Length: 217
Image 1: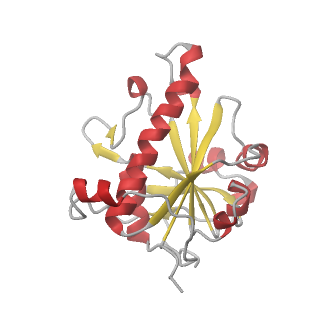
Image 2: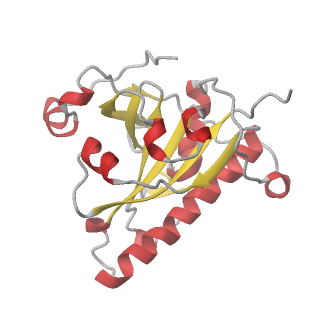
Image 3: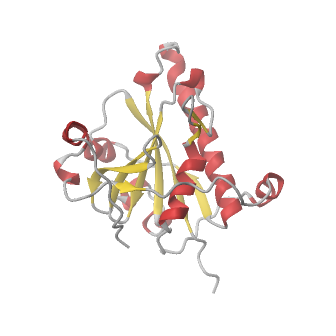
């Protein structure tokens, strides 16, 4: 399913962020996240699990907005703090949403998905069969350049720990919303680094598949 939600980026930002590969993609303005409702925390914890069988059905825009906000959205707008912790509030983790029609970077302040690369790159996010089926692959990328308060040798360990917190938020949201999810290794990272034009300071950490559970036969 191709999205038709659009938003307008400033020209200077477009020049920097949108590569030729993403020229035909439009930014996706997400609906405001629903920040109430859902299952009680203890019930979500009870139902939290990894699932590796997915329906190919695309998530609705509202579900995608809620998912991304739960993962690492802004829950205290006055101070721009997030739903998951980060070392020394570095907020170094970026979420790349790999969808059937392209790759987008989650912009939590604008509540928007900014285009990164055109085309279906889900199969490049891991060697497991389910990565080709799950409608959303979240790829967590740490920008170590933001971790100015951390010692250089501590930056990657902090980034892995911060990714774990974000991933658990995704697990709990999925348990609450009736979605399936699983964290998985990516395998070969360099094709994504090249396609997304990541800088040396940007390190791909993990990926997490999200979608509706497959219908039982």
